Length: 186
Figure (cartoon, rainbow, N blue to C red):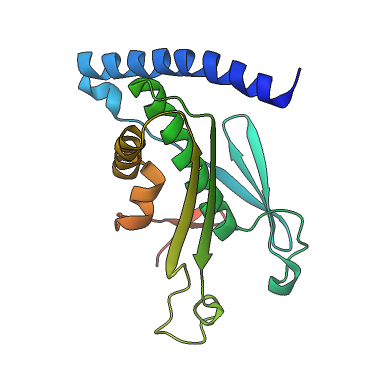
């Protein structure tokens, strides 16, 4: 079977299942607002050098740094994972809302770029943040839908994408450091 035929089958089968799953979850939330409150979690551990392993549910993701940042270049680094998480979240939101709105998508690709100044990472300049100064992306959509339908889809995705929201909006953070099993006062 050709790749095009496989994509057509996925496009035909996936959205119905996806749409049904999403509508079922929406109905559950409408029936009980407490169902909307969820928590996600990850556990990470340092394996060796800069190589880490992240555990999420039953999945493990290796994380490392490129050689020029002291790593062994065996996996994406954390800031690349942020970009990957953002691109994937955008794509998932496009798929989800396209399914709910009945908008067919033939192909979807997103290229994400983050600009970072290493002076912030290395603590060389207090005026330079250690994280991204700018994140930009290009979304390429192939669809038989009208431009107006795609504009509507883009608007709803930009409004509701959780990772885009995380990148744009300051959020509360808190931490606790444990040293040898006891809380370390900071």
